[in-house]
Image (cartoon, rainbow, N blue to C red):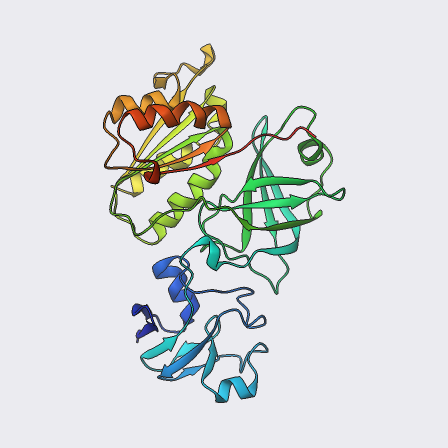
Length: 338
């Protein structure tokens, strides 16, 4: 039978299913409300105090929980299964500042060419580690000479077994040339993260417009998959701007979301469609399509991710349409050639 878990001091409540850990229930119901690290009972990041109720550990007391801590009422929520309703005292993750920035090794699990110049990269962390992040965050790949390359996380927080990056090839780019031409699966990398403040504001009641340019789709994908996962019922409208049809490298995915989620809309916009595209959809600049559809933006939250010229062009136009600065969130990135 499911058990109810009350988290203090917030009074958030979760229903934990049979043979489900408290942390897994929190990830399922709320996305990423409780802190965690390894998710295998080793690191102790998810430790909380049980104020009332009982838990058990299917594989015995986890290595990250000492006998003394257990006797004091501490529990590791990634492994603890309730035997009754629980009241626990735990720190909750609410903002980017609540997360721990780590430097971690990772392995290239596999690569997938999504377009001639876009690679999807899946990274696997050591078995004793997990990266806790908010949808919209990015990581820095650390190169051997001290340089960094920043890439947004395209996977949502609850699907953290592999980290997903969408990387565009930059002519003459040091890292992207290696990725596209010489990197092998199982290659080892190091990164630092999570980084950034671009994250979904779940507490707002306003409908959401998400605007991506090129691989700026990546963090928006993570945000949308997180929103669907937690059952966010606010209207969600994704605009994806690209040059030609081939640059909508995962176009089938938002089209599938259209069939699965009644509160979701999708508008792709091409600025330079090829004749062979036989494109019958919207054309022009993506921000212009937004203000054509939404001439008054005061009642919306707007999330933008893309190259600096796209952000710079959109900001004054959106302000003229009534969008308050505090309701505009954006992630602007440059492609580093060296």
